[in-house]
Length: 525
Image (tube, rainbow, N blue to C red; front, top):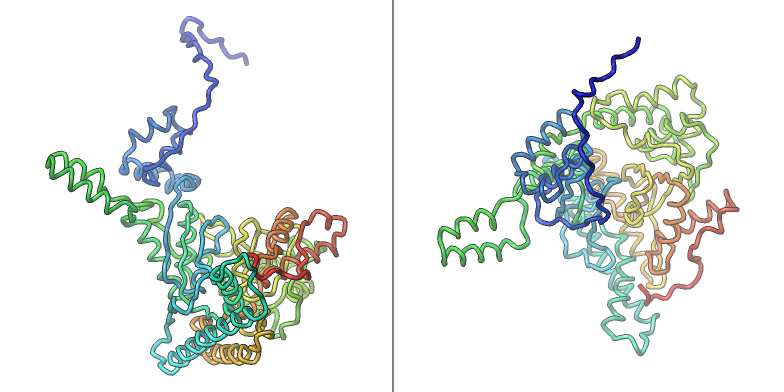
């Protein structure tokens, strides 16, 4: 059937096109509230207004109305990517900091264990439910670790002063400061996970909402409280860097002209809330909490208390498995302390139906708006099962372009002995401190499994699965093997390169790694 032709006379005349505009305009934007700015940027897809025009007509109330409609009702979550927020998070434990920063879309910096003396930072006291004996044992163990931390830092520093002469051109204070950083590299192995730290983060509102939800879902009281405090900080008044100067200026204006002073007060001392709309529904993730327990039970039933097999520090998993086997193995990996190969062997022996049950288990409780668990991020060509000290892992944890599956902290994997102890004659002292801390963990874990983890020192081994593409493997190996880096992750970076070289020899030439077997200049940072 032919459609009728449109009436030419009824068709409005075409408007002449705008004159060509060949000059691109770029300008930085400063001073807009994060949610207002997100709304203004989102309007590019819904309005022909320029950024300047949009920001002039948008108020915080209009931004809230817009976000309530498009973000929550229509599910346009990409809008929250446009609101970037800066937070200072101070006095949280090292354990909580590891959990907090475990976001793939995260930017921030934390206090360095290399350049600061953490004996002065204090530490977090976990809950023991009225068990005074356990609380006393915990306190005693942590204080003993800090005492040994100080003793090792001082002892290694003195050892380095004797072994590393000061160049004539180097100032004495620079020489000592550089060697002190090397001493802290060793002493940090004794810092318990209860140690207080501080960090700053800059994240978009979508990442913040996910982060808060994940923190609220934790088994640790401190981390749940951290999630609540972070949500309150995003919903409440933000701290203005210039608050004192602005208040002073407003008073000076009011002294000259009271009416103008009132107008200035509304502008200069205006309350700014960073993301009150975008985080107001952040809540514990029922999907994550329910699945966590079921995966632990499944791993325990499948592995039936088998002893944990020995494994190299870096194990590059070959690509000789199906995607289904990888998915099932990865889901179980994060729920236990076994190496990837040991779990995979068990999964390989299962029937196809049983493997599929494990894969389905990870998605059974998934809600309408839940993303799949990180464990489903599978299919990467290079997968490294890494076993290293917690302190060194925290440095590797910063690499966001790869998928990381973390296991819980335990004493079952033993501990590392850092370089520099033997030369300083401190190996026996270190071993006694680590054995005592691991013994305290074993006793405390019987009745207080979460709280006990805070007593574990950073020298304790932990296991994590790193999945990545070739470019990321090259990047990590090159960056982390550099001589100014910490000896712990330098060894891991070198082993990553060696593992790729053995499995893919033709690709080894693309790595520009530093041979960690070469002597290191202790005065270069």
